[in-house]
Length: 101
Image 1 (cartoon, rainbow, N blue to C red):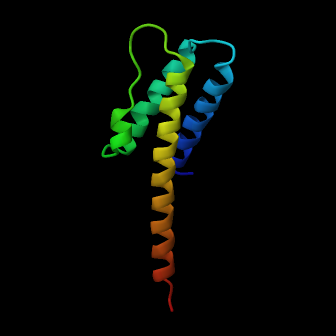
Image 2 (cartoon, rainbow, N blue to C red):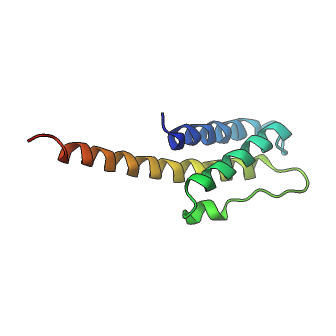
């Protein structure tokens, strides 16, 4: 499993957690916030030129609302999904053109 694919799923899972938790609490828990920060850091490392990822930040003071976590994770999951699809398409094209016949 590629690093991009795996991180995309982590971001999607955190986005879903945020969606589910929004009904019960306004502020995100500290564990989820730290996981979200790590996902953001890794996504930016993997795709440093992506303009959407460059814009994703979480405030460093006070409680973070679940909506902020969800928005950030959705944006990251979408950016990673597009990159994963692009890379998969390129790999498939190389395989097709490198066959013996």
